[in-house]
Length: 390
Image (cartoon, rainbow, N blue to C red; front, side, top):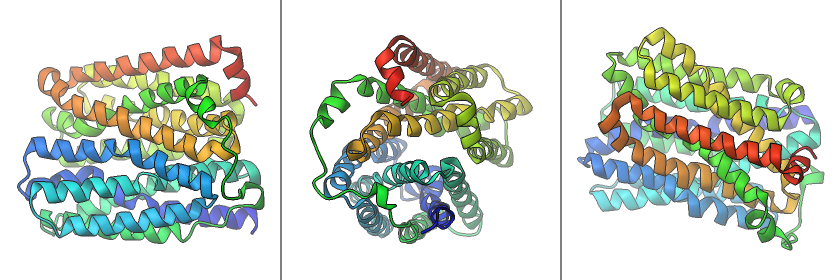
């Protein structure tokens, strides 16, 4: 398969893979509320679906490394997750719904991290631009939100779970669009295990995934309470939609030029620029209430999320041996999208009740802590600096 054909197939897969996530983030709480579940119960389910990634992502990543069949693991997990989402749509009562939702989150947890690891590895092997493939996932997420929002204007909120299940069905199809791995990336089952635990738990890599996880977890307030905050400022639903769209489009624009940006600044510098951009963004969110000003600062999503994520993917590839990369991706997903993001999303509700928009200052503090850790890793430690630049 030519590099161009590989890129087109992976871009097509990304274009469908995140549709379900685009439906779930804004509209799963709406469906849960329509089912009569309390605010506390909704928070439990939403945070729980993030928290189960702590177990699901590393477990299935280990299977992908051990058996050497990354695409098979991705497909099987996507199919099983779709069945769990479909079952959830048919259930009533808090505990049956919670069980199905947590199972769905557990099963879907490795699909995107393993796909990302695959695309980063292949981009390096084939000379492709990872960002130009990855931007289709961001557009997929945005499309899922917009399409489902339009549908729910004419459908009942109780139909949201069926829309989510249908979108997850398209995610299953996306995994069958994934191209075969290039020969240079294929690994036999039972890949070498020696030194993996030492690398992941007794080296600077453990601190790296903590630092990267904190940078992404600083988005917890925005993801969980951002729309409520903007509504409290008097913004209507259209204005709130514009704010979310501006963030995603800025991310897509950055990813479209990711190779050029990476070559110009380097992964380490991009990592720290992105974290600093997050710090500025959260400070602004805490103190400004004007729509045009907030719209401008929403474009810093290109830094706070896209730059740090792009750099993280490249740094994992450089710092981790090939036979352990799936597990490294799984651990990063468990830390950033599981433990830390679930914690900040849960805690943001309490902060927002007490502090309103000033709760963003806690997110700025997380960004500052992440930046301090990054400086210690890459400016103080020569060993980590050499690994990251390898």
